[in-house]
Length: 108
Image 1: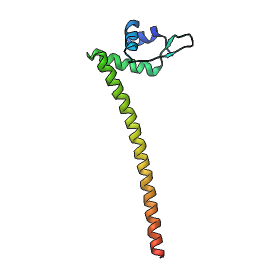
Image 2: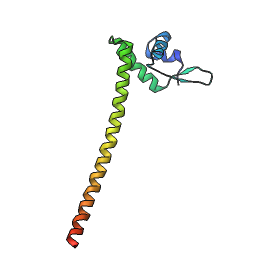
Image 3: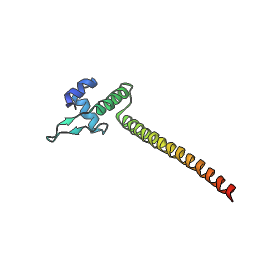
Image 4: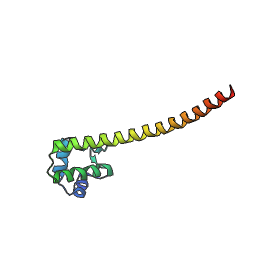
């Protein structure tokens, strides 16, 4: 966990810029019991993404939308992976049932 000044330094931005990003909802660090901001490694990764987009001239509203879409994309990929695993399992089950059905037909 990093303080706001360390996080800003690691990201190469000012503390004020970091606070601005928070105000726009681009980043929400954890808080200590005393209310001090605490930035995680994941927060720093998001901060790097925000900084890269800002350096490309993307405005803060668009950055927020991009981050939301990227998060949604990650969620959709994970969901798709689960569906593919479920489908593979169902195909195996179906194959077994077809074999059982064929065996029963031969017995009758």
